[in-house]
Amino acid sequence: MNLNLSFNDNVLSVILLSLEISTTAIIIGILIGIPIGALLALTRFPGKRWIVALVYTCMGLPPVLIGVIIYLMLSRYGPLGSLEWLFSPQAMMMAQSILVTPIILGLTMSAVQAKEKLYTEALKSLGATPWQAAWTIIKEARKGIFAGLGTAFGRAISEVGAVMLVGGNIEGHTRVMTTAIILETRMGNYPTALTIGFVLLAISFILNSFLVMGIIGNLREERNYW
Amino acid sequence: MEKLKLHQIVVQTKEKTILQVDEISFPTRNIFGIVGPSGAGKSTLLRVMNLLIKPSQGTIDFFGKNIDLPSLSYLKAIPIQRQMAYVPQKSVMFDTNVYENVAIGLRFHGIPKQEIDRRVRVALEQVGLIDYADRKATTLSGGESQRIALARSLVLRPKLLLLDEPTSNLDPINVSIFEQVIYNIYQQTEMTVIMVTHNLLQAKRLASQCLFIHQGQLLEMADTESFFEQPQTKELAAFLSGQMIY
Image (cartoon, rainbow over all chains, first blue to last red; front, side, top):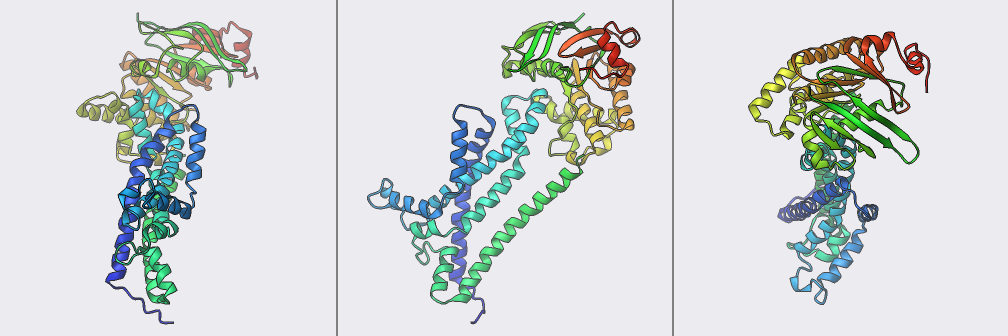
């Protein structure tokens, strides 16, 4: 087997499209997930435990199931068929957004809840208004929120089932790293499949290195605390 | 004289009454020491005064303003809370530098930037940690954290300073620095200080009046000297002599 890794314009466009789709999905996830996650963590209302249970369930949504549902919704006779997004990057962004939003929301909620328990009394006794207290708690939870974003990005960029179904793996249009790896492997182009695989791994490694360094640094500080 | 008075305070859970105080009047501009066995309700009393716990009944006459505690909302409590400060047994540090940890309350109160800078630097000088201004607060030792928490309270220039066993985890040097700062501030300002402590010697050193709380009730309140020399109740006498009382 020739392991001479090939890196050409096609591979580059696949990588860029993957990054574009996953980054867009994460941005949508941030816009929806962080405010709702923080709100859920900081408020009490009847039925909250059911919503929390639903959020945690959605964090483990099967990608293929999401793919099928979005496929049906975007199909010609589906409720969103008029958008004509099926087999387009928009459909893939939509699928990934649905997958990552509960992850960002749930991990934001956990991070904020942990800080809320720790800081609420101190903030109240310092005369903080509810908004000032909420904003300070969210800022204190930022490391947990960033860890959540890393997890969500990892899930998005390595996801294959949903994007394959709704994107269709069309060359130059909807082919991303994961779907390209499957295709190249099936065609016997192992060097290309491996090249893309290593790039995917490198992206994950770089992102997680930043996160791990931040988290370990934080743990060291906590250990010095008392 | 300005008043600080508690009336008919009752704090209870489903199972039991934690605190039941008919009336306590604190003559202002004094240091008060609250002592009593563990679980007596001392910290609860302090937290009620800081409006952190809502009692099931009771009012507080806070420097001329009569407040019905059970009906007090979060928003209405803010202007009152901004006139007092609270240092718990184990203070939390925010994940930023020491300077910002001291300044945070002033930012909440909307104090101008220059004034914040002035007050923070003075407070850090007072607690002997001016060189720590840029250090990350979460890396401080327990004693340093408590001194920062004290500085964070002092910059607010509260009328009432509530201290809940603030030196219980500290080494003798930090205890001494802490007490010296409290005493100096008390001498220089018009602050009233109420301090819960398990350290009877500390109460003797700092307080001008002491209160004894036992089983959720105020059993005795007197000048420090007569409090320690002539206890009026057998419970206080037993407590002072080191007997276990429950």
